[in-house]
Image (cartoon, rainbow, N blue to C red; front, side, top):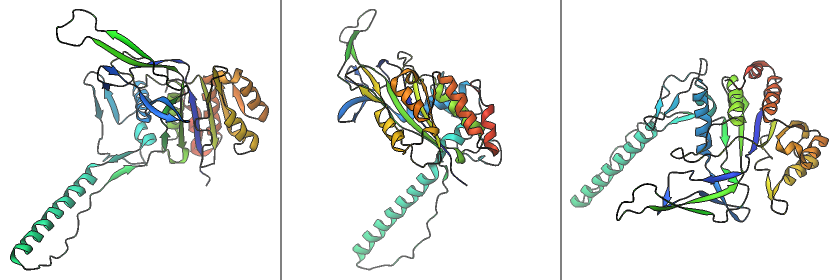
Length: 338
């Protein structure tokens, strides 16, 4: 049976990113940074995006194993050890899509190995002191049992479309100033779009309805990488490229590039791959602001489905997956309401 994948690359709208992490350097709130195309770009971690997707499931009232309690500021589990995981029964949407691993068993095994090493060192020291060589019978190791499920969903780190040029804001704490306490602080800022890519192995999802829930979460996510409710950046797609395929490689990852001359973006690499036949145009769903561009028109001429609305892309994606037949038919029933 052929493996089916859903790949996607999301491009957000342009906005000012700042204070998206709880870490500082001195009195400066920093943005994460990576080198991309030989230049410095700001970045948002894949973990932050995955957290937002999972939190969206919680907000929609779906059955999740791990939820976030904002009042306590911590995670709460229904079944942290996954002792009740059974693919033949109803599963949690987050465990189904994102997988899990209970590392406690591995930690126990490591502790036992360290204990054995300490005993070996003690035996060696005793033999050296007495001058006698003793051979100790090998003891069978008690192997820990690891409970894990590989994640059907892979999410890439979000990278700014535009290079970072060192923008900073300088601020002062409001209200009364305390003597000998620093009241000035600064924050790194970046006016940019972000793009990130994801891939989902549809066959590995136990409850196929959860595929539709993921599509909804990608198109309408809650805040990503917020810090103390002071930072707002819309991580929903302004443009999106989706690919439903049997191919094991995405070939559409981070397909948007900054066009500095025209102060916009381009998708030349995507066009080249479609024109060369490496990416069949019929597998693509292209939606959002890109539909009104020259590149969008060209992709439509080549045979891609090009839609002006992001919501329409979600409907089309669910419909295509449902047409795969069998258990995938349940995906068509999923909607933005969860």
